[in-house]
Amino acid sequence: MKSRVLTITGRDTGATFTVEDEGRAQLHVIYDSRGTTAGTHAYRDGLKLLLQRLGEMGAIVHWIAIDTKATGHLSLEERTLRLPHAYPLDMGAIISTDGSLAEALRKQVHTAAARAGRAPGASGGGNGTKRLRLCVDLNAADVLRAMLSTGALLSWKQAS
Image 1 (cartoon, rainbow, N blue to C red):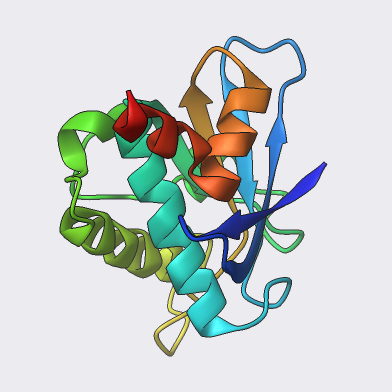
Image 2 (image 1 turned 180 degrees about the vertical axis):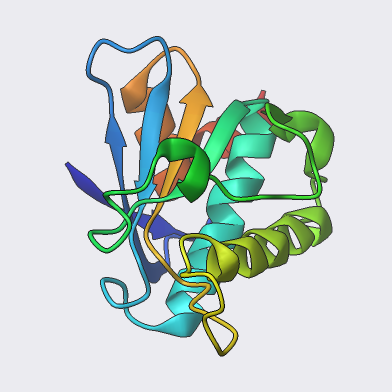
């Protein structure tokens, strides 16, 4: 089921994602590419919110990989983003509550996504707004979907 990334006030960023829970120990969050969302700003803003919310939830991200038709023939290792942080990512330890570290991580993901899956010797900077697949440790797909979409869990935490 495709979900939209909303701000804490309910504004739709235009970015979309899906949570897959197919009996795996971890959940997969598929973050749609810029071409699927409403443009570059929607992709950027949505990804920052998604990363920040994973941090607020204390999620563990085992890997982030590009997930496109063009790179489907590559191994997971070849598609996995090379980030300054080692996997698994303890999002609670990486992300600050004010969002500044979420923006820094978003930029690192953007840069790594632009490089991932490219042919050797390819020219240009690459596309940093590709479809991404994140392997996440959490207990319930519905909780993850609600939190990433609306920030509902954060509102609940602040109220208690």
